[in-house]
Length: 233
Image (cartoon, rainbow, N blue to C red):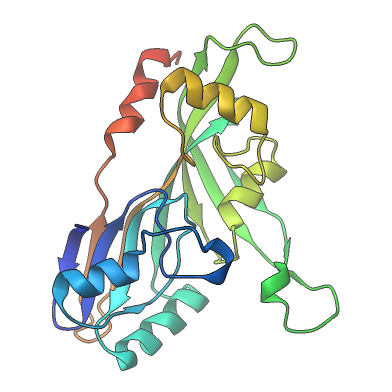
């Protein structure tokens, strides 16, 4: 069963668990957990995904309950107009207290609309909430630094948060593509939890039909408490 955060005649907003795909894909044929199909069966009605979250990312995920609302909201998510998305992540190292990452990103291969190389403007704001150290040797260091950060994507590029955090040399822990595999495995073994440490924490948007401002928040998953013992400052 999925946790439903909000539902009415037009929308169904759920908490997506980490490790679930939004829908079936031939790229991951062995997976058996899909949010779209589970939600459809749970409420007994067809639903349309308005946006995507990576398989490893948890948090707020929006579905429409008819095709027209899906088109309206899909355009809003693509443009970012009237939306405010907030994420939390655990990253390697100690970033600055706050900053703006303004770094254009190359289109992902399956996003290419032409054969020429194409870059898109991309901006992400970050704020460091707390810092800590795990008792794990990392390279020449006797311990591994980590930080919890709040991320606000100002644009909606593919894998933007993961790619931007790698760009500033603070990759999200558990990111198999943009992080360091040995370190990710060592942290997972130490904490007893293996996942991409990224969650869509809060979404602010206007209702596509009545225009009311909505604020939807996802619950904090229990495994995030594993980090509290290692907080330094």
